[in-house]
Image (spheres, rainbow, N blue to C red):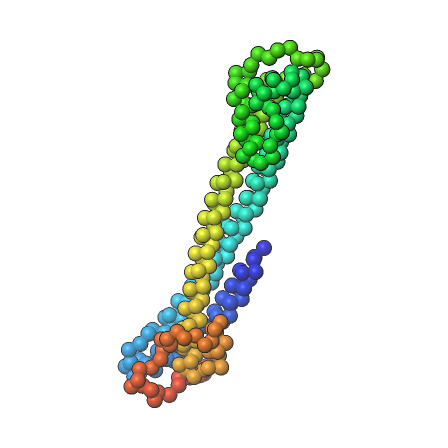
Length: 256
């Protein structure tokens, strides 16, 4: 679903394209013809307006596409973070249950040898450190004394294999989130560049249409072209001092 920024960009682009096609282009043709008749040097306004009419939609399309890329990256980021957090919770639970079972079966001294003493931490990095300590202490599997009782004795080899598998999944999940975060930032950078290019394109179109309409004496239309009609930008169509008395240009008659 398009963002509000894209919806606003579509409205702005359509308005400018309409202004260029319906108002600026006929006036640009008339101005070019008038200048050519007077042998005055100047811009090829018709060519410039036609080029902008073609480039505005392309610029908007690129901007919209990059906005879509950002949305997809954010969706993927959410999925990966959820998977990482689920695996994090599974690893913490497995460690906590094993620590409780080991201490109950063999006592605190064995739990300490296996790096399973103390409260199982909550934070992601701390859980990884806790798990690394256990995996290091059980490689190879140590020879343990007889348990205090015969019931609820954990299978240390199976528990280690399970924790090692979850640890690997979590490590991969963390890497995936970091990679996707970088990709999201790159997508945002490309989106920002595309937005800046679109804004530059629309500013050029607005300034040109505004200048043409003002030159032709259509201040009523010119005032509605710019986001800020009181722009201090130099009017590129302002006539030189020798032509101060030139009469306003009107668009050619439809019957002409």
